[in-house]
Length: 102
Image (cartoon, rainbow, N blue to C red):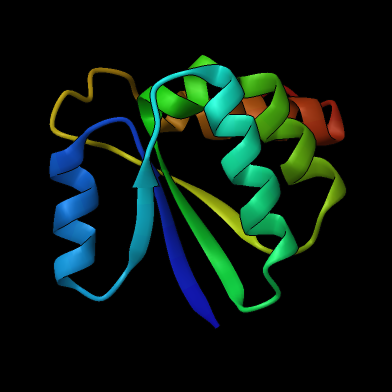
């Protein structure tokens, strides 16, 4: 099982590469969707790490994958420009998945 990173900046991608995690740098929603599709078709990838900015850029697509696919797991990671609270994303995901606001 491999990790894979989708990042909006080269620094995060290079940092992950130093730990042995491959990935790509993307900036547009269409690029994110294409790379997610590729990652989901690779049976060796078990966890996709995505920066907060990319998840907010195309949150509907990401949450659709989270709700309808068991694998790979999509994990939101902060990058050096992170300003949002990851807890808000987790609460939103739970609210959309099971209909309970926490």
